Length: 133
Image 1 (cartoon, rainbow, N blue to C red):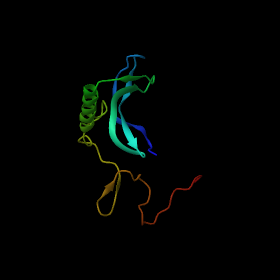
Image 2: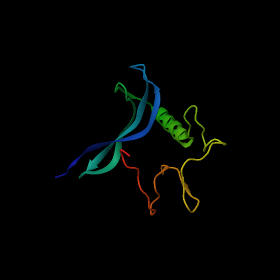
Image 3: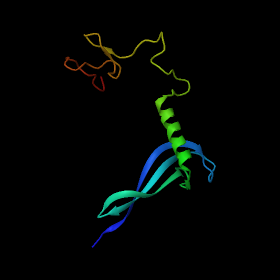
Image 4: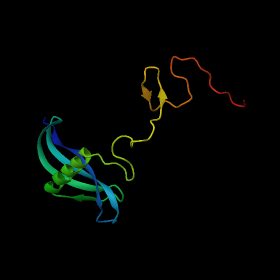
């Protein structure tokens, strides 16, 4: 007795934003690759078909796209990920010059920006303010 069949695996290649053809919203789209493989005794052997699709995350429509477009969108998304972009109105690197650094001064000179001011350092004696005083 031979057990054979096929299995489809879906791989998400990229998440990219463009204008949806159905709903008209500038929404994020999942660029996917669906590979169907022939299986023998539940072991995938060779691919039968490969399909590329883009699914809108707003309305849910899934459109079939050519392989060239899927590869281009994947490369474009990887290039955008490699170039970090700052939010509008914020500096891209570090703190602007002239602003004082915030944080608590440790005895060793190290400043930890996440430690709030006014609280005792780990390993030091101190009292916290009591409510109602």
